[in-house]
Amino acid sequence: MSKLSVKQQANRVLKWYRAATKQQVIEGMHWYNDAHVLASTLAAKYGISVLQVAQVISVLSPQKKWEQNKKETVALIHWHFTGDAPQFGLFATASTIAECHDILRGDFLIPARRTKTYSFADNIAYLEHSTEITIDRHALRVCYDDVTTKIDKVGVNDYKFARQAYQQVADSLGIKAYQLQAITWVTYKQFVNR
Image 1 (cartoon, rainbow, N blue to C red):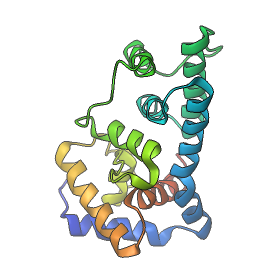
Image 2 (image 1 turned 180 degrees about the vertical axis):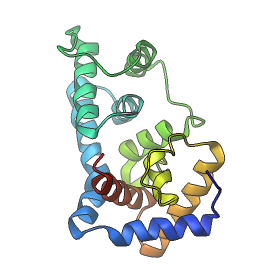
Image 3 (image 1 turned 90 degrees about the horizontal axis):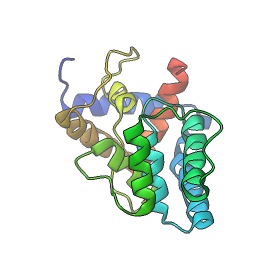
């Protein structure tokens, strides 16, 4: 992958934002709020923090669609507190599942060095106060205007530059950077039908 400047990436992010339909903008603007409502509901039901639920959502999120992510989060938290194992297989490694149980016991917090999962949990848990930006491979594909699947990993510098690009564009639009990321994510995912 050839490196693009922050300005070049920002131009591509803005292109995807401008390509969004009115419905995609609405969906993106509400995406993290809807995730926060789910986390808050589960937190209240099981007597845990919103951050704990958000971290479970984030740890379980790689390589899955949002609906599956929600289903697995609900099932895993229910399992943790009731002992009733899910009636379906979780698409997660044993170590990922163990980490989720550690989170729910209060024995583990996602470290900041795990940028994607840390940011995703922070965006969901803290919503309006979050200054994090979730840069996953889809966000990076937006930065590079790449609709192929060849970009599948986000390195430290990739994350840093993409974050700066999203922040610049969000500031120019007067919205939160995580809202911009969600809008472009919704638009990208619907465009490539993934």
